[in-house]
Amino acid sequence: MITQQFIKKLVVKNGNKIILLVMDGIGGLPNEFGKTEIEAAYTPNLDDIVKDSITGIADPVSLGITPGSGPGHLAIFGYDPIEWEIGRGVLAALGIGFPIKKSDVAARGNFATFDENGRVIDRRAGRIPTELCKKLTEKIRKNINEIDGIKIFVEPVMDYRFVVIFRGEGLSGEVSDTDPQITGVLPLKATALKKEAEKTAGIVNKFIERVIETIKDEHPANGILLRGFSEYPDIPKMSEVYGLNPAAIATYPMYKGLAKLVGMNILEVNGMEIENEVETLKKNYDKFDFFYFHVKKTDSYGEDGNFDAKVHLIEEVDRKVIPELLSLKPSVLAITGDHSTPSVMKQHSFHGVPFVLYSKNARPDRAEYFSEREIGTKGGLGRFEAKNEIVLMLSHAMKLKKFGA
Image 1 (cartoon, rainbow, N blue to C red):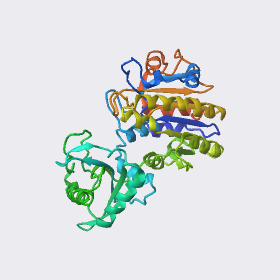
Image 2: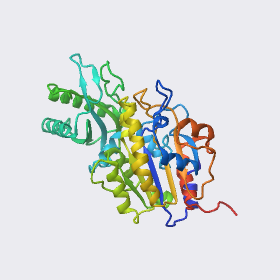
Image 3: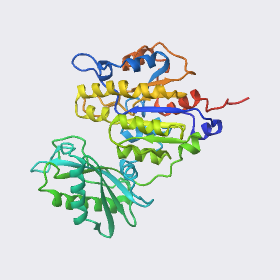
């Protein structure tokens, strides 16, 4: 990818609008009937768009690398995810509006279910509701707010997710995750990845022990798993690099945190349904020139192994979202995902995701319908790294001037 500094020199500001639709975890693998979730879905509107678009398969990080949501999104926003490796903790804190400081260390937490021997039997505690998450975090706060002179803040995020912030002198985000990412095993101990993080790792392990003692009689959430330890990064904003006035429409806090990190304006959505997101977009369409529109549950259903629910949500996006986006007549409509979450795997995977760019300035390729295999074999962009998507969006919106004489 050409550097952000190079692109910055070519940027032209104009009133042309870009809409970026990200269906989280959209990519899949064939089920027992030989179809991915996208291929099984009835998507006439997406199919029509593909016929008039330039398409390709994007790798969020690189070939063969399974990305987290953070790296996947940063790439789409035009940031090299390897250069900007940012933990989930700071994103979760930003997403809920926590006043995080530069010297803080934050970690994203899952409430989990442990068996009588302390083994993880459910990494998400049955996806407990947000109300129960709030009660549990309040219980922890009452019992634990400081360890060895380090202040500790525990805040609910959504469903089974929470965030913990450690504040004090001599802390470092170079701490390993305690989430083993599989069930049937003991949670991991936090370890220092660098010598300067030894103090932090020790405090984290003490914190976990005290939390488990505090909630051991709760069910199904009687344990916690922490990951994504991080400090606040000094990252350039999209307005500085790409000359955009960007806005984010998302319902889950972590994605708001990602957007806030790169300088997007966070538009509040009155409700959790995609119709509420559409309404927010329409209400604010005149105020910004770049809109990040996030759909979360394609990923959640993939992680749950719920093939049919993921299919139905893709169809719902096709039916309820695509016509509304087209009615706004943006200069560019880009449709993609931050990673693949095949239902048959029940987790993020290393497979590329379809990328569709619809614009009057696009040169349509041979792809005729929305599908990984169709776009993978007929897409004019071929296979490329997702960090190049922002350049394509800018160029098709006529926001880049000619390079050279």
